[in-house]
Length: 384
Image (cartoon, rainbow, N blue to C red; front, side, top):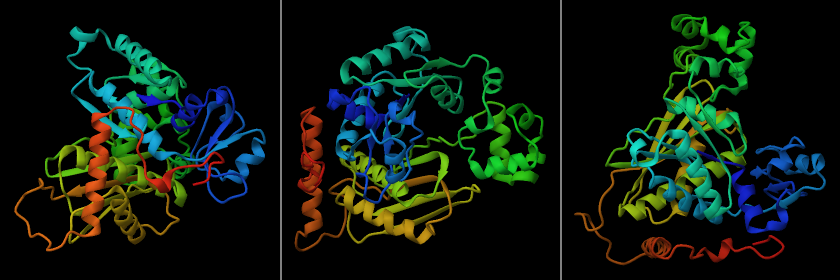
């Protein structure tokens, strides 16, 4: 499930006068920064996320710029994901606007997968006024490709994986970036069919072990495992694999912030405490590195988690090497009240934790309640 142009669609839903118009979510023209998201009307002008806003304004002078309202998007996302999680117990959210649902064994309750897809689309449209695209297949990798196949507002089921893949081009394969495409072009591999003709050993010799394995499996419709889900009781983590490798610092930092907000919410709702932060980075050549930091106190807020994760990112990323995957996690989880050495005086961090926990509990009990930090409130002209 992939919500269509999520940020921009929320802006259009909140302000109906924007529907059918080129909406660009990001800083105002004349300031530094990049496009966070844009409506499909804006995409017709060649605008895409990660593009400098100055260029977006030149390409689409009539574009309507709206500031990023991350708290609003996270709240809508949370409500939608809860709707989806009610359909199947095997549910995996992979980003603010995407999730996997395993429908195995639900046929007696809801019917065939296509019928479930239609039900989901109708339910989300009725309750939230948003469209989404759904891909159905035998594994996550093909389902992800299928969700992109008829966007926006798509619903497509893959019945013959090889036949489906052969309709696509190499650039459509999730996880293949520009550097990989250039290398494949040098080897005169210009189609998925041709890529499939090479053995695993040959691909590994040409593209490296990790890259060769990935391409071998992807060309055959087998899940390369980029959306692995290995829940462990002693840790909570979330990661994002980019469709195209990213090196824009603003976009990377935004993704990191989204991940931290998701993690902190899960910690509070689950009643966990954690003081160890883990950062995972996978670069364009599939090299993966992790780094962690243990604090002297338990994490108190998403802001604090983001600050620590950003500190770790600066140690592992030079700011120019493209990143294909970014992940954040917390380990060594404990329940409040576990045996631990306490502080003599309550400090400001603990107070922040209590405030964030109270806000989370209120949102859980009173759906639709709008609570945010004063510093995040926006005036009518879009300024804080």
